[in-house]
Image (spheres, rainbow, N blue to C red):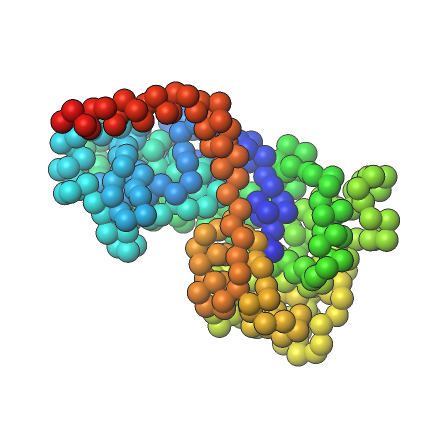
Length: 354
């Protein structure tokens, strides 16, 4: 079981707004125009799974075969001939990862919106000359590829420097959803099986988040009175997993000193200890510590590449993909079913008359 967006569900759009603000601040710090600070995150614009074209600076919505369904340059939706001129046959090679950057996680929502803001700003700014592949300002040329790289570097900085985590931990009530039924759910699962937690986060952050979710409400009616800490709800806890590397060769397995959060010296080679926390390792080591085979594991995650595809293809684990956006889609489908059916009938009528 993964942690972010599975056990720890971040509040939307508050969490994305925070991430967006930190990203813009970082870009301004490295020399981007201060006018970018006027942009505010709009949760109605980005959606998970869009593709950023680093050649032309467009955000694309494509289907599983690479057919272009929607094309946006900044906040301007391209139509007909404009799309065909950039993408012959309205098709892209999705495996061209050097050119096409897939924004396939919920953490990418703020990044997605930032690409649109940057293209919108530089396209409309009179100081910059527009080219198909970027912008010129005097003797300086800024390509969409360089914009992609600098935004990716800013993303790494926001996560690696700890500023996003610090802001989150400073206001957990604002940025984290807490479901009082979670302890009871995990207790019931453990009655018939085993539960392990595998997260890319470090122990200090994981401990703070999980303590907030499980340990704070001592009088919670759903809390199992026999469980003293959040760690007691899991049979195995692994932090710093570095997924998807975790599902391949992995890294050195070390044990975490839960008193101070530091890693113990040396590679851990002993048997599994209940309530202990480990750092690194691999999916093979998880199977060994739990005493199970790959096919016996049901892995729950939200990242279709880092969690689901890698664990299934490399280890044969059974997988459970959590797609929170479906709740909204199903609600819209239910509320607007008559409108959708009428639209389909109209489309069918037009097609039959051609």
